Length: 252
Image: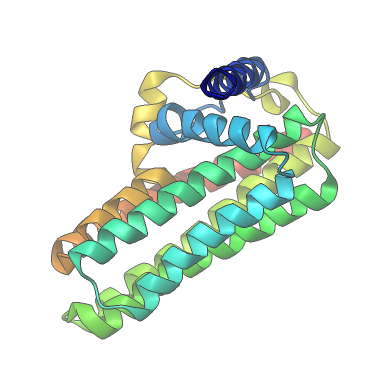
């Protein structure tokens, strides 16, 4: 009996390693300036989740829904409970796990031979909801518990929600329009990321945003870091929008 269990365990480990190796060769090219957490932490985590999900027979849409469960659980807890150290740890853990599953759904789709329009639609809609509601949950928590003075600081999470929504929509629209209207190769072909660009992009990394909730038990410190990250994201968007618009004009 023990030998049979050991053989089964070894077989499962072998299949897992083989699936991981298959994923290594099927990775999407890193986008230019893709931030460091997403590349060096979340993508490897997502690869492991994807390998396990594939071996368990989970469909990509199921993985997307699992990601949504973890992420929206964190958002609801953030909105309804007072900020404490333990809540910050729990919210961070749920967001990080949700982000790893979000990376995994596309990888599972590639293992199964490619995704579907319905799967891509579901993934993008869930991401869009996440981008907006996370900051609205911060807004609600700040209004109820942070004792901010003056209350004009509450415009920060409101503005962050807008910046996240615009950034997400613009990036998706960029990809869709480049696919429908092929232009110069240097515009349509993704450029490889570099370590320096990845580090510079850290303040705009969703993974870094997830991690700052570890400071939730100290609301004033949390809000200072949150505001700085908002400023970085706003600055990036202001600089990126004219460049993206120029890219779209070049496609014509």
